[in-house]
Image 1 (cartoon, rainbow, N blue to C red):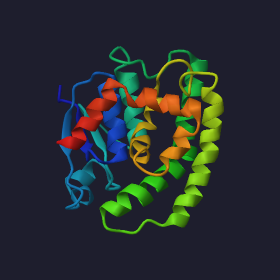
Image 2: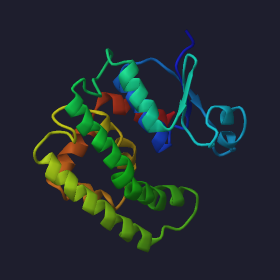
Image 3: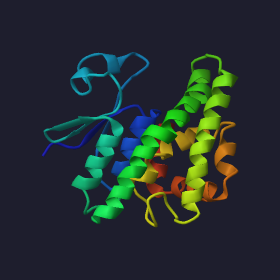
Image 4: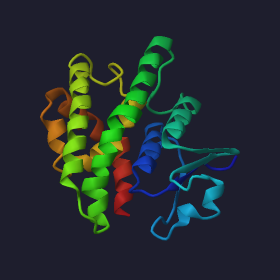
Length: 214
């Protein structure tokens, strides 16, 4: 069988999300770095893997996937017997987990990714951060995190007492935001802060971060 391949850039939040799932499941894979500075993601042969020209892309035998959250869910289901159980066999628990996956994607990430762009990505490329945009999206993220604080006051993780994909999907943006002024949004909410400390200390996440230093 052909080896599992993950194509991406180690600094990409979406790539980090996909690689975190593979490390949590203790699945061996080959990481193929895509040179985004030279536009490799907008050219063939990469476009045959992701026609939208975005990282990551994923291959497992004859299966080809793109979109990081689709990749993480495939990995969690296909390799359910390995590593960390990132999903549940219980239909009600899985429904709650899927709800939180949607919350992360459509509520949390809409604000968090914009803050990463303004405070991390733009300075890297010599662009100027817009304080008004930061303020707007900090307000939006704060509202989301108020809901998280309430939820986490009653459970260790977002979807219950076990670490799942619902938590894992947050890791890349949290990693970047904790190096910006927006870290106050997490640190000022005790249960959110404890949750962040817990999930960012996971050994699998440390392996993802080690790729940034290569």
